[in-house]
Image (cartoon, rainbow, N blue to C red; front, side):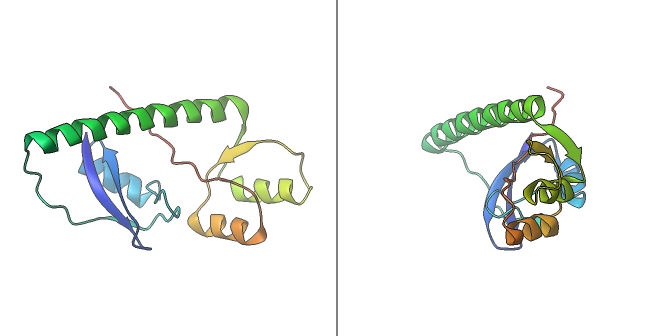
Length: 140
C-alpha cells in the first residue's frame, strides 16, 4: 500500500491510500477519487517531501496509521450498513434522488453513483444527500 498527498481543483489537500500508483491512476480516471471536503473528482498528486525518519516521527506516524486504520474500519462498517439497508440505484442516483425529493417516487433510502456535476445540481435544488467516501475492496 502507498499513501499519496492529493489536491483537488479547489485546492483542498488530503491523503489517501492506494495499492500502487497504477491503481490511483485508474481510479482517478474513472472519477472514483474524490476530495473528502468538497467531493470534487478533479484530483491530482500533490508534491511530497521525502520522509526522513526520527523516533518522534516514527511514533507520530504509527499513531496516524492507527487512526487511519480505525477510520477505514469505520468506513467499511458504514458501507456495509448502507448496502444492507438501502436500495442500490447505480448511475441513476441523481435522477432517483430527485424523484424522491419531489414526491414522484416512494420515500426510501438509496445509494449509487453521481458525477460531481450531478451532485452540484442536487445540492442547488435542495435535495438532501450525503457523499460518502466509498472504500474499495482489498485482497489482503
